[in-house]
Image (cartoon, rainbow, N blue to C red):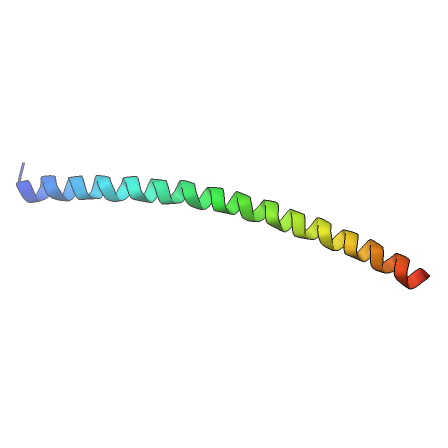
Length: 57
């Protein structure tokens, strides 16, 4: 096989490996963001409940 083809295949495999790793990291970040979003949402619910009590009194 031509050396350029072999080198290109090797570079492609390295690139695919890096892409797979980046994809896994992105998935982890996405999960972290979902958790943060849920936490913020829960905090806003509590703030709303507190404000309702303040307004009623």
